[in-house]
Image (cartoon, rainbow, N blue to C red; front, top):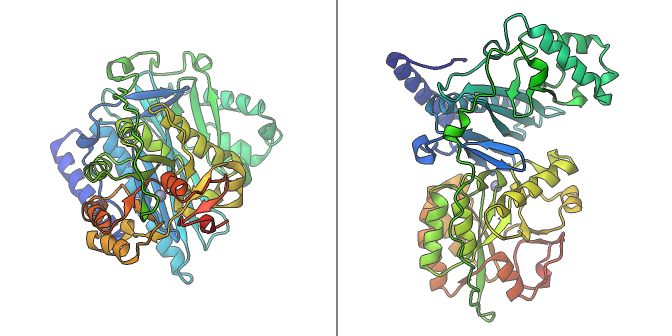
Length: 490
Ligand code: ZN
């Protein structure tokens, strides 16, 4: 379903009912989808952050299901502009529904297999417009290759209206865009020798369908071509960026206008950073490391930090790089209060699906975002789904941390189940897996943290645990429980 701006109240009511129904349907299909926080609580205004030329619009919202068999990892921006956020969230939920339907479809043909969906995005602001580019990757064990596609959404910031190619490009000028596109491809040696094929000719012909995926970036007008659209599948998704100079006289919009300045907060406030105090650890007494993945989350993480503070306890937060810019004050608090910050990748992909360069990016970009707010270098990596591959070890020279107690908090969302899972199994040296994404996890911490301390456990960071057990971590080692050097898995 496609729609632009909804202006009439009746429409808005119908829309709300539809959204509720959609949400209801999705939740009944998959009970593990987390609740969507009210948009107003997240942010009020669209803003831009520049980190070495990378623009990010709004705040990242994430839906993550840490199930290795049915992995879900979805990231999308919330701008604070209701009309834009409605369209984006609706689109995300439409994608989830589609994915669930495909999953059901494939299962009908055989025994239940594994499946995964990963949606990542890029966002850009240019002259009063916001562009969001979604990359979707779906995997079904019934298929030999993942399904991969790109789609784009462009909005006017002032009205929230969704912009199509017709809004941007003058009528009749599509052939010019197509010509400029081909000129760009002609300069690409990988593509240029494929340009005389029928597939290329059809896929780049000046039709609205061929040019429906585009983004307005600072450096130019980018057109995206999906897999198989104009090149064989192994070429993947292709794009060209045409400088605005070349499109002079062909655009309907003045993209040089600076509406942006009115809504831009160029730099996010850097909170008062306090040097963390060293913690006092008695090496003779038992200790465990609580670890939290997938954050920071705007309400759950501060709650957990409060509980840790009240109990004079420390923990390790394996953060997602794409959530750091949204919650820099939480990262700063984690640092100032002496907790350890580890890397859980940038956007929670399945590592086995990535090239070496993509793996590198997932961790270097996370490091870069963290260092914008705290003087800190992460020592520890916990890959999404705990998936440690040889290429990950080859590319990332860090210490890998898994766990010895899995609370299954993302699955049960049950305070009592989380607490008893830990208290029934806990032993000295355990690394306990939780997620600072769910309010039930914070509820469990309220009970669990004092209980562990009551049983005589010291709550320490993973690095403190390693050092107390006199282990010097070696890059490439994997730790899941730390008693002695024997705890090294590989
Ligand atoms: Zn995770």
